[in-house]
Length: 404
Image (cartoon, rainbow, N blue to C red):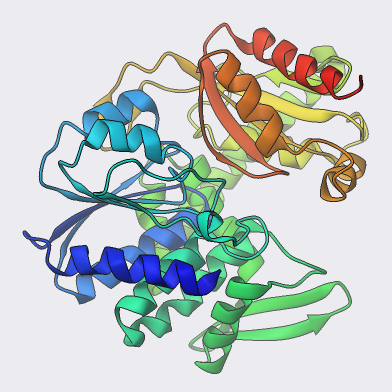
């Protein structure tokens, strides 16, 4: 598994090494894993004297991809998304650019020899257990140059931030990165009753990786339409600053106010229910927060007393037409994020219930929507505004068919 993945990385690196001009464009996700991935890649390429351009995306939406692939002769990297849409990217690229995909979600093989899909899911590793996007990027970096082993600290931040543990511990490739970071004195691993705690060591301060991951999530998610993602990448590389601390305090207060308002609305009857799904539509009420926040909100309410523990949770949020760094792009779509409450979560893990990585993409495809980064317990896709109820109905059809 990992051996085959490393061989694929080595093949891609041959193309990167001979690429001219020494310039690369990195597109990365805006959660703690994606931000850590972006930071690892930026530092890796700068150490090899590449000029680096970075863009933080909530999702690689098709209208945005079309704009990206107006380019020729570029080296372009997608991090923490795009594994599933390698065929779409291949069709848009048509051999014109050198493309690397460093993702860890369910993936499909590329159909363009200039598109290297380095998603470990294609090599037998599980992205929701063994390896995060940041660890994927770290392995890529370390294979390129062993001296990049010092970037293991950021891989651990991303892996912990993504929250995929076995018995409270990182496992497999994620764990190897954490142990490397521990050997180098960047983190401490402490045994707890519930598993392991991963502590960042920076000068005389110690910070929980979980806490720092939430810090990055606020910058990248709540502050997406501001300068949050760029400051988050800087915090990954250099640590937090007074500027980022002040911004996080302001963003947390804004998130708290918006979340409390919407929870009150759901408690008052805004939460709709079907046989298997409980859902809501935020429209644009989360603005100016990024659309990642609808998933965070689903996660937050998943343990609350008004949530049915046996129904999937789905939330919709309209995607703004303004993409930082790209300006106005006509999207006219809504994002749906899904989570699962406690009892249903256990049923999915034990294969007694259908995982979100199967349910949501299938229903989305029936409506001609866009699917990319989905795990079994967390998933998000995109459909046209106005298709919200249709999507819920399609998921119900799929779930009802399993009962026959």
